[in-house]
Image (cartoon, rainbow over all chains, first blue to last red; front, side, top):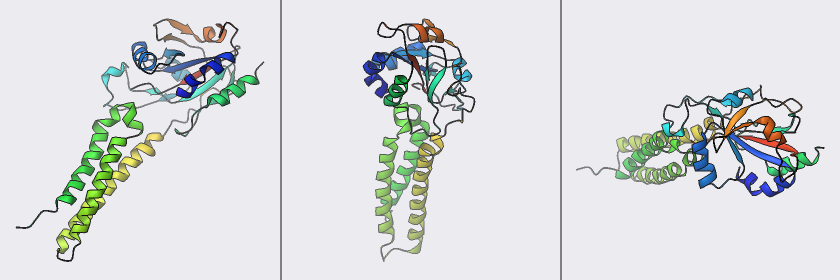
Length: 117
Length: 148
């Protein structure tokens, strides 16, 4: 995600809105992502995994040692995935990797966006 | 009085500590869960002691018992290290197949979620509100694990 923050001017110039979604509650996101890490793009909270379920990105995690301070009702989280959505709501590009080491790169997103009308 | 091979014991105990501290402590924080550098350092030190202990146990004046014991201790330590490496870098990297995730060309499922200022935001807004004072070309949705 840091690479997207670093490339935010180029992404915004290209008309791309960057939105990050996780189960973290707004308070946790404000504290960790906005205040501590200094991210400036939009963060959305999905603590009940409503959107995460609709996108089939649920990563069930029956870990009883998860700290209660994470602010979530259960231990399920989102697995990482990226989707580029055009104004009509159609997916134009996605990265739903099976390999945790492979991540989306801003360059890929910028190039895809160039091809959009 | 027989002198204890403290090197092999230290290596053995340190291996156990290295693994258990990951399971019960360091796996709780995102920073040390994905790259358990503390535990890897502990294991590295443990391996040094196990090696020194092995070398000492295999000196010509040492009996068969000390050789067997130290070999078992060293093997166990290596097994614990292999266990940690497997859990973190193999089993821990598993991701669900997400075969139901929307494909390119399909519609992105709608949602209404709260932003970091506790305001509700709809997908439609993300796709219509201006970016740099111009109509947006696209919205990039980044789903991530969260800071837990």
